[in-house]
Structures are given as structure tokens and as C-alpha cells.
Image (cartoon, rainbow, N blue to C red; front, top):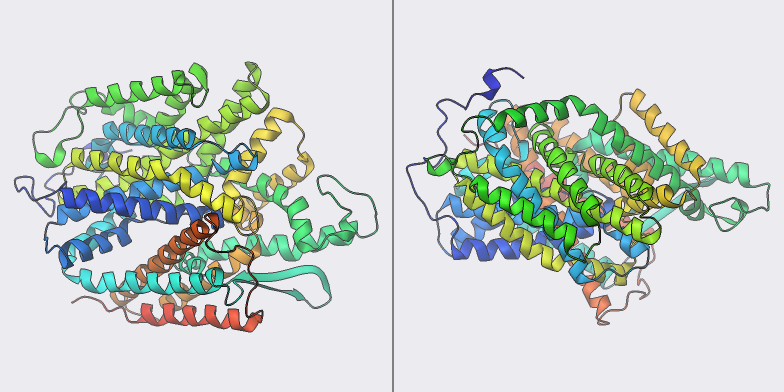
Length: 629
């Protein structure tokens, strides 16, 4: 790191200068932020359980905020909009931290209480905010020119171009309506199938399928063709290589080969996937996550050194200017110690002093890393899973060696991992938010307080969302794979009990290593290997739409405008379908809607036609983007 990168950004003037005071954390902004935090938290929870990925909520939240505050309440303050998007990302982060870890509790049939879930996500969320406060001036201000924080910078541009908010809002809301309508017609009223598949001629047990869901199409468009292509590569490796190969070599025996419950010759492609591929995929994802973490070690060391330097001099003192005032460090320190003490002594999680100390150490260490990494690659590419896996691996072994084993030890290990995971997700998101605030002239301490309010709002309800989704679709099922939660369960069980099919785990681990040597993103390919190809296929189609837009647009400004237009519409598709999915789950949970109703139209062509119509619409909407003069 150069000396220049440690100097404050000389001469930088935010959009709203520090000498100017506009309405910011108003009652209207806070109430709207609470509502959006809950909505996007629920939507991202559903998406994370379905796909194993979450998407940033800052840009659609900023657009919706502008549409409501400007269009309905006639308020013109950009700082109010900034507070709303900050609170909304809290819901997204809480959703991610919850669904990446806590589904393991449901898979163990423990039925965790609402108090336990809320305690885990709230303590993790508060730690994420508190631990990021002393890093803000170092990462956001001093390294303004070296850490771009892509989502935060993009969100600032959206806020600054508020006069175009009406058009942008229409894009998000139109996508929201399309995504929600397709979900309601398909999985709500069961008008057509939302999952289609077909065999490949005489290629036994080789299957290609697709979930015809707008959210997956939107995810593919946002992440782009390269990542989407690597994801489907993993899916194809599983469904047209590994599954047919296992079926071929196991066809001649009547013996049941662990861990499947039937002989291979009696299993179809789905049976082989459930009995064998899930373990191969789990090994691949675990090792790929560790590889991703290892690749960030230089950044890890750099972050620790830079953080240590930031405690020297006046780095932690509150600045005199409005745009440089954080929550006072003494209150940050009190907050961290209070949260750690609650974790250690309140009998809700039973992780004890050992677990609390581990959370404090890994929390701050990885928060520093996560906050810096998202500044380079963005929140969506941050290796939160890898850092969570590393935490769980170490903590599980510590608990086992100290005599805390069995189910109690597994719950304690998962709890530590869940709190750290939530802290990382929240820290990464508030880093982006503080970058947005730095660019538009927000007040840091108000954003930090707003983030904590958003954490409370979404954290108190996320447990109910998980319970409803589990009761309606069942965690770990084809309808709700919960890939990250299943992975955490497999890792903890394997370390505690040692009764896993380790040969399959090692096969997946070796596959991840080979993929990494091929120059691909091993974590993305491993996620595709773990999930059904039915999820990767529509994601790939979304990536193809994005590629077509990029490929056939020559001017850079027009290309960027079309990308942004498509991203807003795709965000609406994701939010609309995900939210309707949660509503459908609630209706099933309360017995208003039957979860096993027959599909009216079984024809695959009907389902495919609906999906292609949405695909063409996404392409057409993206093409309408025009560069601003």
C-alpha cells in the first residue's frame, strides 16, 4: 500500500457540502426505511434459500425511495433518500446472514425459537455496524481513490440523478409487477409448471432442466455472462457427467452404496443427485470457499496492518465537519463489549465465553477484510461464505477438543458461524452505504444509527420468514434447496461425528482444486455443481441477454445506459418474484392456499413460452436505455 493511499482525499467536495444541512434522518425516511428493510430482507431470504445467492438492494431501494419521497411526499432531500437505502440494505444483509447458516437448525429438526433467531442476527448485525465504524475513515475517506466500492458509487450516481428517478422507478416497478405476476400464476394459482426438464436421447440419467422463474433470469443479467457461464458449467458437470457416470458404474450391483438409501440401479437422476452429488458439491463449495479466502490473504494482512495504523493519532476522533462525524469511539467500544458479554452470558445460544471470544476475534478480523474486499469487487463477490466456513471449521474443532460435542456442540458451532456471517454481511453492506454517503454528503453517524434501526426491523421478523418458508416448502427440498445452510450442516456434522461419506467430500474438494487450476472461479463453479442445473440454466440465459446487450452496443455510454436500464428492470424481477414467493409461503402456512394443488397446464412448451416472453421483455427494456447528454 502506497503512502499516498493513506492520505485523506485532498480537495474532495461531496454533492451536499459539509456546511449545508438538509433533512436527513427524518420520521418519514426512517419509517419508509423500516418497511423496505423488512420487504427486501424477506425477498433476499427467499432468493438465498432458492439460489444460494443474494443481490444488492441499494440501487432499487434508492429508486423506490426517490419515487415515494419525491413523487408522493414532494420531498427533495437527497440525504433522506440516502438514509432509506442505507436502512434497506440492512434487511438484505440480515437476510443473507440468516439463510447462509440458520437453515441447518431446521434441517436438524430443532425448530429454533424466534427469540434465538432474533438474538443471533441482531447481535451479528450490531457487531457488523460497530466494528465497521473505526474503519470508515481509513477505508472510505483515506482510500477514496483506491477503493471504488462499485455498488456504493453506483448508488450515489442514482441518487444524484434524482430528476430521472421517475423513469428509473417505473423500470423497477414494472419488473416487480412482471416477476410477481409470473410467480403468482405459476406457483400461486398453479396455472403452469415452473420447473421443466428433459432427458438427452439414450444418454441414461443425463438430464437438462430449468426453473422458469424471472428472479433467476434477473440474477443472471446482473452477474453477467462470465459468472453465469461458470455457474452453469458446474451444473452441467454434475448433471451430464457425474450423475450419468455414477448411474453407469452402479447399474450392475444390487447393493446399497452409502450414503444413498437404495441401490444405484433403482435411482433416477434426482435420486443420484440427492444421494451422492450433494456431498460432492458440498466438498467442492467448502474447499472453493477456503481457496477464495486464501487468495485474499494479502488483502487480509494489509487490512490488519492498515487497521492497526488507523488507531494511531486522531484517526478515531470525531471530525468537526458534519460529513466526518462517526458514532463516538467510546460508545462503539461499549457497544462491542456489551454485545460480546450478552453472547457469552445470556442463555439463549449457550456458546459460552469461548464462543464469544471467538466471535470477537473472527468478527473484527473478517469484518476488516470484508469491508476492504467489497470496496474492490463489490458486495455480491465478497467471500462471506469462505470466511464463515473458516470460522466454523476452527470453532467446531475448538468446541470438540474442549468437550463440547454432540448436538449441543453442533448448535454452538453453527451459532458462532451465524453471528460472524451476519456481521460480515452487514459490515460489507454498510461499507457500500458509507461510500454512497461520502459521495453525496451524508452524515456518517446518522447512517450508522439508521443501519442499526434497519437491523432491528428486519432482524425481529426474519425468523418468522424462515419458519413460514420451511413449513411451506421445506428447507433442503427441491423447492427450497438452502445450499449454504446444507453446506454448514454437512461440515459441522462431519467434524463432530466423523460419519460423512468423506470419499465424496474429497472428490468434490479435488474437483474445486482442478477448477481453480483451470483459471476459473472455483467457488462459482462449485455452487453450480452443488445446485440443480435447473437453477443454473435460467441464470445462464440472463447472462446471455446481458452479453447480447454488450456485444451489439458499440458506444460505451450507450452500453452503460443499457446495462443500467436492464439492471433496474432485473432488480424488479427479482424483488417481485421473491416477495410473492414469501406471500405464497405465508398463504400455505396459514392454510389459505394448498401447497400440493395440481398444475392446470402440464405442457412444458407453455412454461417455456412464458419464460422466453420475460426474456425477450428484459432484452427489449435493456435496449431502450439511452446515454444522457
